Image 1 (cartoon, rainbow, N blue to C red):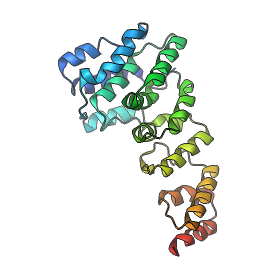
Image 2: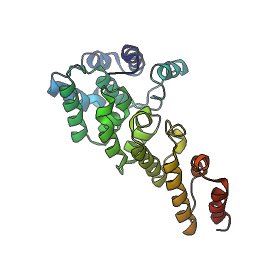
Image 3: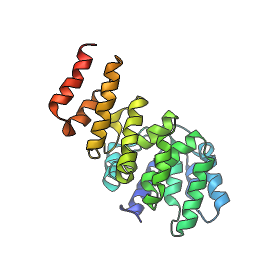
Image 4: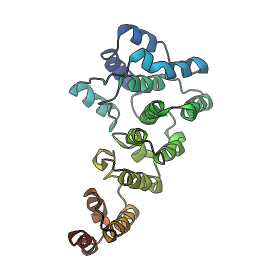
Length: 241
């Protein structure tokens, strides 16, 4: 069900949360997570900002390193307390009943406002039954909400671990189209592929013909699968603009 130590992850997140919210808020949050009581679970997810606040959390370098050791590629730095609280709540949910687990979380996606969507997509790396969320992740990539896209793309190992090649290529191109920072995409180099290189070179030709620029990372991604002469020829469009 999980490919990492879930208890270690929950314990670490609990420690970080306790260091960033008031004791009464932690007392409340630590008693949530009963997914069998759907109404209560949903209410806890919705009211999280009122309980934890929205301040940006602090995390020590040691905690960041421990987190990356437990769940490689998963980063929570610069998150707000309510975002982390919601992800912790989801990590606490009992996943024994697969159908209930999926139904409850899927309904959260369907009813979510923007900040709730950010938390839900941020939680993909810690949700049970990773294969169940592939379509939901692919749908999120089609979003036009910048913060939602960043939750999926930035420091999130789920897409690289689970998306098909076509969906992964769509993620990279969406990042380029929406001016996201490609260097923050987990697995960018590991998931690079010949088809993506072809798409990127076609894109570069179109942009060059229109007198427009491309991000430098495009050449880095295209070069391993493209003849150097072809890359240099396309680059010439940019030196003559």
